[in-house]
Image: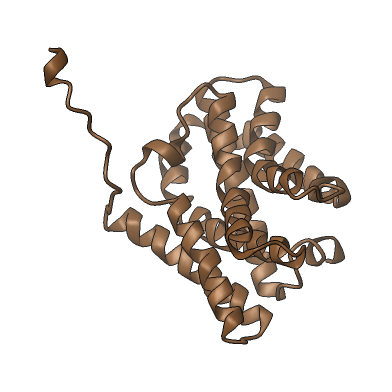
Length: 221
């Protein structure tokens, strides 16, 4: 699958397959949001596409990287359209709860893989460590952020309180640390992806939450 391998920095076939599943998971989360908002067919496709490709597109914009990955490899668009059509034909309200629970695993895998691959892309373009890690985090997180903004919601990544973007941020630093240890690129990507995914799943299942900014408004009452 050459259209995938050049995009994801020579990942192994197994990791590439996981990234495909993760992309589908992000698109599916967009589908669920669009369905809950009762959007029409065009809205469903747009919201799903924003969720799946928004983070990578924003990364490419900030890095001045052309062409955008989904333009260079248009097969992704066909896959997205097929997923949207299938979901609109077969997905029913009764499927929503089970789908949202099941999506936690591939979503966590996608967070790890996209934060690692996005960081690697930025490093390959000669950017510094901090900028590269931020680009990886943007790749993994901002598709969902843009989706929620388009759907007139506060982004879930900002209000869930369970670490999400922080996990991708940590995964990017694991990638850099592994490279400084002179591990192979495949091992660096694998360990970085695994670290970010593990942190996210741990936060979800242990219900670990980031501190909430609480303002003391007693003086105004």
